[in-house]
Amino acid sequence: MRAQDNGAASALLMNGTVGVGKTTVAEAVGDLLADAGVPHAVLDLDSLRQSWPAPPGDRFNFGVLLRNVRSIAANYLDAGAVRLVLAGVIEQPDERRRLADAVGAGLTVCRLRAEPAVLRERLTRRHEGEPEALRWHLDRSGELDAILDRSTVDDFVVDTTTGPLTGIAASVVERAGWQ
Image (cartoon, rainbow, N blue to C red; front, side, top):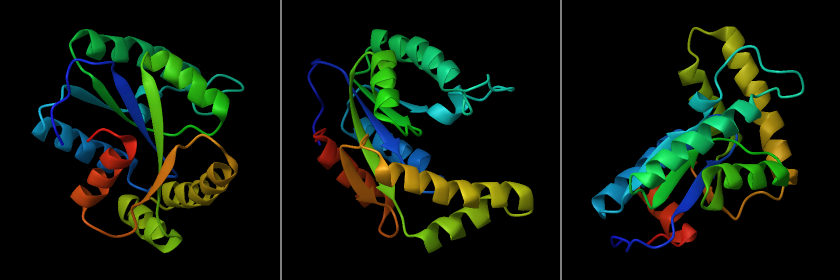
């Protein structure tokens, strides 16, 4: 990977079901960009939507997420970032359009996938001692995977079932055309 010129900024979303590694892969992509000298920022979209209660009709606080992304992305771009690496979930083409508008840069969407047994193992580790949270996440994992299978929001897919994290991140960067 080489450092980019100060060309047009672009964003890359790691999309996928719970437990697939969106945040982990986004951080690894950020590490590759840093190693290459590419000005960037990594944003965990889940943290930007966390508020309670969610408004009626907006189960996962997408409206709050968009307002926060609009502000934060603009700050990073104004500070010189040319790549924004996002970790989160979009389920519908309209959500993709609205997120791209909030980011203020071209948006590429990478769907991360993993085998169901691996997802179950990751979620079980993550929610050890939290049986209700584990049950919710296991149910949501299958529900969201099915939604994303029917959706048309992703530009490409990368498997996270096995392989070194750096190799997965390098594959994402290559497929996004950020090399």
